[in-house]
Image 1 (cartoon, rainbow over the protein chains, first blue to last red):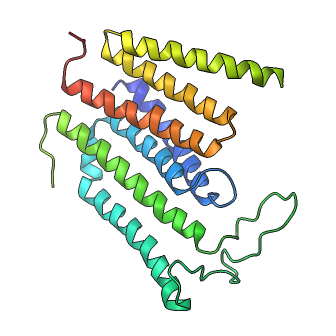
Image 2: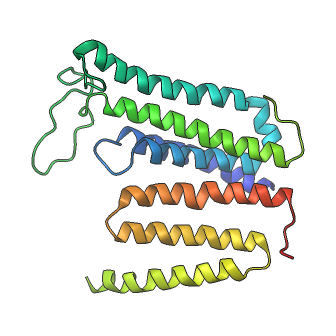
Image 3: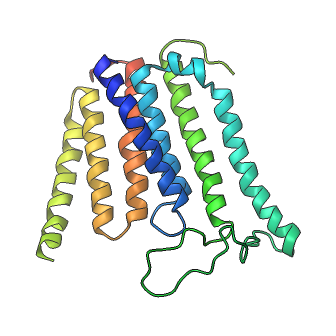
Length: 154
Length: 82
């Protein structure tokens, strides 16, 4: 793409990533969550792939690395579920309730929202966001590489 | 409230107009861009119908990612419809 597109993409990418991270981290108190935030971050990755070309992105981030990220998102999610099974004998038990990290009791009535609530739900949002971001980015990267006529590295 | 009621008329009409342009466009890049506009209007409609969760997902998936995938796919084939 042209130099104008590349410059604007360079300026925008940070804001897109920060907005996606905001949607993921505030997933348990505001609209949005892991899937929506991951899709926003993946759209930023799509912007970079379209602006800079897939072969140039391929030098830094390979599809293999994105596959590892996606799998680690799934492993974190299911690991948190099994942590509940190990701690209390119930699958998906919310082990963090009552602890200082994400364990506060939610305030009642009109309030600005407490980020340290929800137990393991914010952590699961992060895991889902990682999986969605890596999966959608890998799809776009592989499609862009395949249509540019170069060999896709397995 | 009257403005919201007017938007419930205007946005679906614009959706239909965008859909007709998508179906009738001969240049496939034009069709994809109208599809992106369709997705943005659809996410606005979801937001008006009190579903901000769906609106965020529609804006990210419909307007950004499917557009990128379609543009990449069209680049590998022919741009003009037969």
